[in-house]
Image 1 (cartoon, one colour):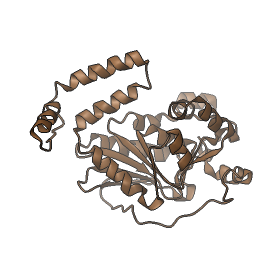
Image 2 (image 1 turned 180 degrees about the vertical axis):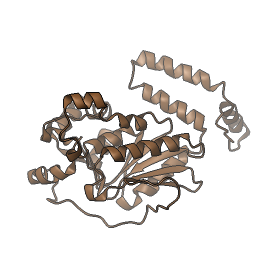
Image 3 (image 1 turned 135 degrees about the vertical axis):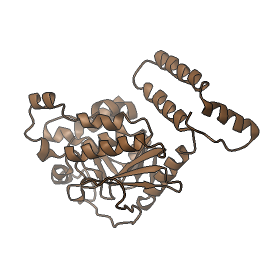
Image 4 (image 1 turned 120 degrees about the vertical axis):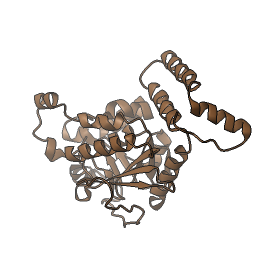
Length: 297
């Protein structure tokens, strides 16, 4: 993980970004937050959607391009766990602002870390709160998603991107490697060759290339990104929460085991759905040509 503060000085001088400068974007007004719920210093949290069943988390360190300091990640983990425990929430969105989703880790915070301090303190362990979430998490990425920012996006289950988004793992430029999944998740998204190119050069890739490689599901105009991401979350929310959770677990298992073992796992989950009331309701509704009334049972 690494901060864009260094990369906008070093990498821009190498013409990694063709414009020669970091673009700034106007506030679209798409994200509106209110004073309800827990108060945080580094994130903003709101419940959105027509049915108020989508949890929205905005990283909120704009002066640091949303650099991922430990206090931010502690707050992010708490917000994710709270939404995960809230039965009224169907899916969670993590976003930043139009300039940066997250420009990487806070380099100043970890500059004096040592090997022993990293091991003894469990450096980056807070990230597990996001990866352990049972509900679907969607990353809505505008601007920079670099180093830890790219790794955070890959922790999510689906990535939607604005057309000006930039992804990268530039840790090689500051004498280290990705430490929160960049060398492990990226090859699973884009294959070994592209992952090697991205990690070993530190170069950025734009949203269109990220979509072509399979890192990003869809690309939208900047001003439409959050709206479309909420629509996706709401679509997921029309299904049984229990079955959605089981489906997420089954897809994730594909990255943890062999094909044979994965197929066995999938079949066991499939069989298990036949013990649920939501499976009965879903099939009955289909046969009766009506909308299902799922109860998360």
